[in-house]
Image (cartoon, rainbow, N blue to C red; front, side):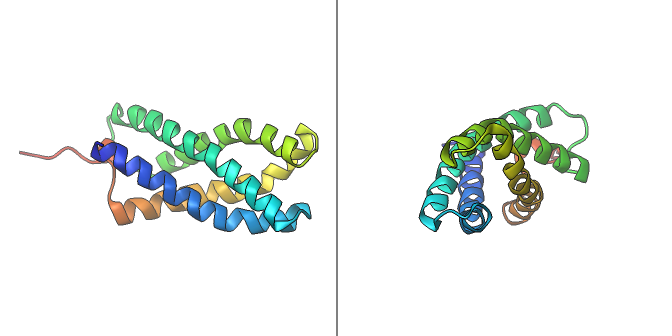
Length: 145
């Protein structure tokens, strides 16, 4: 496994482990569902998000590597968060509607609270992950010989 792939896998798994720990109990309270049901939904949602995380970060880093300015500015982190969370809305709202036996509109409205949390969480988590593990090669300035 390449260092880039290993980094993406570690990042995605850590991201989802913390997400389940936060979202499972919160959904139980928000939706008045049993903790077991919402924990299972959180695991399903996290599994979908895990796959999206891997795909999205690969696409984002490919785009990022073609940029003239290297590093991860606040604007670039903001773009990352918007792209990641925007994609998840399209993937997760139908799952939530089915699981919670509600309409797509109601699931979308319910997802707005989760989306707000994850928007901030994605930016903060990525920043913290980069601080602990360093920037990926796509965002690192070139080495001078």
